[in-house]
Image (tube, rainbow, N blue to C red; front, side, top):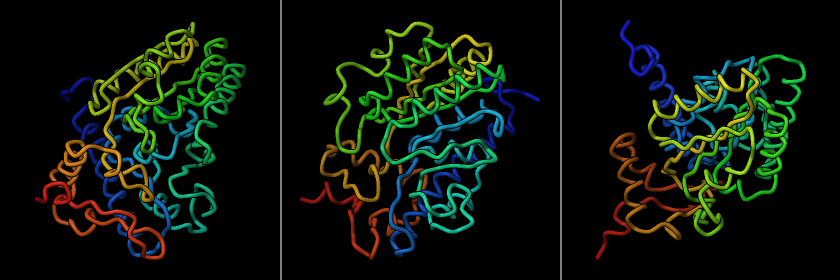
Length: 304
């Protein structure tokens, strides 16, 4: 069978199916939020290609994953179903993440070896490194994935984890999904250099910087990083440049800090490619108890 950048046609179709599923779940969850059936949402919209590129290189149920709250597409890539994500979102007892006790988008799955994170951002880094060091001690050839947004790289946990992982040549891959905004704070306001540059001082650490919207480019980086980890050559950090199409969360109004051009561009992408028929959903996001949190009105910046 013919291959495209090393992937078969069926593999590419399956990746696209999972991307579309992740996007549709974001849409459905925001509708349910509007109906008062849940209380909080953080979406993966705009990050799907980078996350699926990572997931396709992992071995579900064998390798370990410490995802962050925006890793919905990554978890789908590992085998989590849409039903399971909705059970978590609706806090149902059958939720495999935590039996309905965790916040929405705090992913966990025992069978897939997805370790649930706590809400304080960055705590997953050192946990992942500890897991990777244990894998190396046991000579298991298992690989550990850990992710975050670029904002969390300002936490000390990130650099402590890089230091320990590099010193121990731990089989861990740090995936930094750089969408430029830590909630409302732009990267330029809290990072002295690029994320790629600030990780340059660690020996044994392999670094990659990719266009996270390019599945093939990102999957090649993960392929090399995973193979390197399995050969006990040390950790890797992959910086994927992505676009956050939705606000940080359902509690956020990105019109207050994104400029008009960026806001309209995100709106255009959402409406053109994914949701041309449900403008009532995309124009309004309503939080718990029916309170309007913010509106996505495409006319907001074009009036008068």
